[in-house]
Image 1 (cartoon, helix red, strand yellow):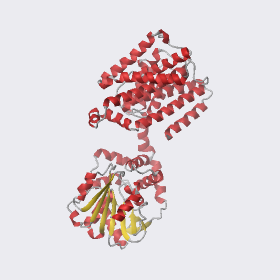
Image 2: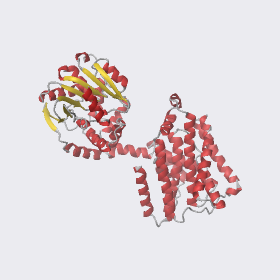
Image 3: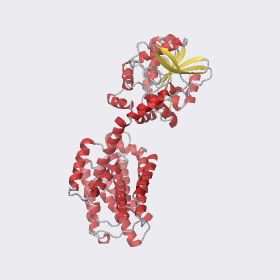
Image 4: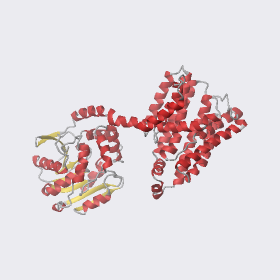
Length: 566
């Protein structure tokens, strides 16, 4: 919603800036119209994975429908638009039927034949002006700025609606069908329905853009929607970015805007477009918008993150410090009673426990492990070494024995402490903990982990994804800032450390009770992993259907209740 509002505001400002330049406004209107149409093509080709080279035909349906009804019957635009949408969706359904049996180049040829047939058919019908076309189509409003604003409104509204569709279950099905029809069918997805749905939605967008095209330019002919237009639409999504919402706008700006920019040049446009396609395929194979996003993630956000980390690290959180092995270790404590020590996970700090430290009858401690948060850095990223610091922490504070709570990576640290120093652990609560025999991270994930250390946006999305029940944006932002304080080498180093552990042989040293808490929606730790850990221990398993990876953040009151009962 925010992105749509930003584009609306920027679009209005651009319109105001060129208020007295109708030709420039006409160019911007054309860009918006073709952005809508190419967005429709992106639904088929980018998201659903079906090749179409006849998309200009849907624009023709919308353009000729509204032109004919307006001139001959003087029907209002709203009625014309509804009829154009209905006709476009019917034709989208018809052209979608071959997609149920055809794939790849065969489907491309079929859709190209459809586009050419529509162009020739319209040119042969005299009531549509034949090959000459229809002239003097009345504008929706006799003002170039007003017409531009109408096109802008349609573009913003439709991109918002399409964005919701893409992020809905049907949007997920589009992507699944694109990636593998066999796997999609195995999941019970009706592939025929998904393909037809994509074609209909795409056709509707094409019909709407054609309707706006007719009233904006005031003149249409069959060649306006021929094969060259369909190829231009395909070039727009390739250049702008396949499977992106706003890549269509970037592609349309280039393909639609360049002819005006080079209008006084003797260079053929076919040569310019051909060169551009070669460049983008070689250097931006996934489109400009993807290239810009990756450039921002890899380079442009790094300086901002460094400044943010420096400021956040100095921010006072009413923390305390204790010196261990000449290193300052940050910790927090609350309450009086039986001691409970809470160990955070990877990409985290003691602040993850801030909502669960106030428990009647318990003296709670939460510390930033070395290499995390506000604690000092040590040379290694190592689970047993973290546990050794935890033991010394307890010794220095005269904590003989405590209930040990470990979340995620902290669960591995808790296990290391409890199995190697069982006298220090009265009971153990593992929250979506790394398993007893280690946690393997696929090699292809390591480049992503490497990117997290300098990118708050990606890291925040990752944390949000593992906490589906957390709706507190302010807390999520704070936890992301805390995650960025982690030693940079540990973004991948801790994952390697979790791969190295295996406590199955020494777990027999631990005779006390263990509770393993797992969220059913957890994307990292499964119920099977938890069961495999529990079988080596005197423990029980609790699974909560509404929880992801972090009950301490997603439902803190439930966690406190579970801890007290345990």
